[in-house]
Amino acid sequence: MNTIKNPVIPGMAPDPSVIRVRDDYYIATSTFHWTPGIPIYHSKDLVNWKLCTYALCNNEVNLQGTDTPAGVWAPNLSYDEKSKKYWITYCHMVNMGGREFNANSYTMWSYDIKGPWSKPTYLTSIGIDPTIFHDDDGKKYVSILEWESRQGYPSPGTIVIAEVDLESGKILGKWKRITQGFTTRGCIEAPLIYKHEGYYYLLLASGGTGYAHGVEVGRSKNIFGPYEPNPTGEPIITSAPQHLFFLGDPDAGHFEMYNPNSDMQKAGHGSLVESTNGNWYIFHLMSRPLKGTKLNPLGRETSLQKVVWTEEGWLQMADGSNLAKTEISMPDDITQKSNEIAYNIYDDFSDNKYNMNFMTPYHFQDSKWVNTTEREGYLRIYGRDSLFSRVTPSIMATRATSFNYEVATCLSFYPEHYSEKAGVGLYYDSNNWLFANLHYSELKAEITLSVLQAKLGQRTEYIHNSVPVKNGNTELKIAYRYGRADIFYRLDSTQEWESLCENIDVTYLSDEGVNGVPGEIGGFTGLFNFIGCVDSYQHESYADFSYYEVLNKKEQEL
Image (tube, rainbow, N blue to C red; front, top):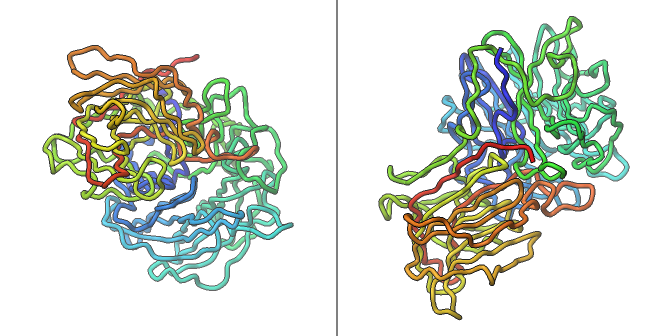
């Protein structure tokens, strides 16, 4: 047997939904305020995954103004063998104020996993995390968390199910509640239904998407229940196996459930698949805190655990425990590629297109502001809003997938006004980022390289860390090391890198470091690297980037 190491999809890859169609495996994950929306990864062996497409890439959803961490949540990927259609069902969280959680759920289909996908069809606004089950008799069902906003009622709500006409989106009949008294850990969400040997199995995320997270399971002979819970009364997979009884708010956080003996935290929100050789596996989200902290800059990542069916017909992890493992055994013919290699990125824009890993916050990519056609061999980015904007920031970003990496670029930029900027940076959301940038200094009457930083919406300008760049051309590099950032530059590629700013504390660029209140998690997306351009002057200036590179280094114990 070969040993593989989790996560199998590092960086922001939360809420994994997995299917197998013959010999191919696919996973869809959440994207929140990022576009294109709902990436779909492909694998032949369950271990090595490659981004193959996005489901939302043509302005199907308006994310402008989205609060962190609202947006596109928990896509459910399914396949209907009878119609040969792939289905994706998701919710668009539009408001989280007052804990009302206004979310609209939609479904869409395609005959090909790479699309084109149908226009989204509206399903419901009853809650969050909708999933579809295709029964043997051809009937379709949607299950979802019915969000509870009333005072004095168990929060965040209960799971409900109804038959649905997928083509029209019409809910057939009334919603039926199926999880009253189901859980002790509470905060159940993300219902998934599977059928196995005469039972319907209900897989749930529980404990909130924080340190108490877990995967729970129940079963019933009838799809409408009642569902009996797992006899242990505990999650079948978690990073925090100690008992927790909790049925109220908050539904994320639970820092008291942090497990000091595990590198993996927050394991939960699982999705089940049977492999081609008849084995069963669960993919689930997890996080890895910076050592000595409870801060998770890489967000929620995707991991894999082997599970088995007991003689009594219940699911459990293959080793008999419920503690999620960083390392698991796989068949000898499956070898895991190194994350340092698999998730490196290099793009010199020489083939008139850009790398599909690039994502943009709050709005979709458009050739009017980003393209490889106006100057051959370059990515041209037109400046617009400042990085504080949640409307149209001109950012091209990729997920951070390691605690130890470098991101570098070379750009040409000729600003004429102090509010025009271009460069490279680290980004969580509009309130939290680091930006090494070229801009025009009126004081010095020349193009200048310096650093801007945003932390919890507060702007800091590194006025003592600046150098002139007379011809508007420079290479920039940020070295990220376990929550610390060093910024380098060179004005000629034949020169050695020179330091612009060292040892900047960017640990706050993490799920727990942004926008939160005590006991809660401020976000659950993750850190990104980016190149971008700002023009709060006339929206006419642009920067040309000749390459973009992310080079992951070997992660080491600190």
